[in-house]
Amino acid sequence: MYKIIGADGRQYGPVSAEQLRRWVFEGRANAQTQVLADGATEWKPLGAMAEFTGLFAAQVPPAISPVTGSHARRASAFAIWGMIFGILALVCCPKILFGALGLIFSLIGLSQINERPDAYEGRGFAIVGIVLSAVGLLIGFFVLLFLLANGQFHQYHHFQYRRF
Image (cartoon, rainbow, N blue to C red; front, side, top):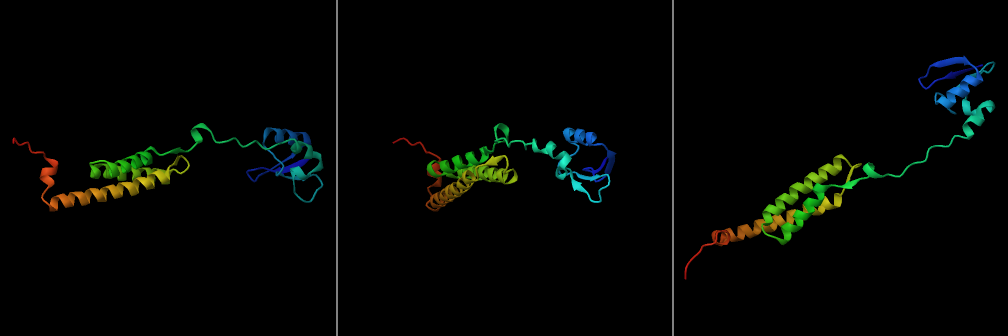
């Protein structure tokens, strides 16, 4: 007969060796479960007892499955669009509009990646988007200031139709 200490810390038994074997197969006891045999003075792990070692030799830990499908990280769409708007802010007009959109989308994407690093990647896209958008905004503001300083802002943005 045997007594065991369960996972909840409580003592169970006395039980027979056959009952202990059933508990192992049911998953209620394992090789680390502390057991006290009748007549013994010290508790031992169940796996260290000669009469039960055969139960645990056949047990193989489950294989680790690769990350697939819904568990895989994906690039943040906000970070990608932020980078796209950042590129457009450098090569297209209106620089201020694309720069602002790129900055907003990139910051949202970076925030999303920081909050859920297990689900999202694309930190590089977000950082490139922030830098390109900021440069585009600066260029746009300097062009705007230059046009205002030279008095050409009105003529630049509002075409005047004149007959010659």
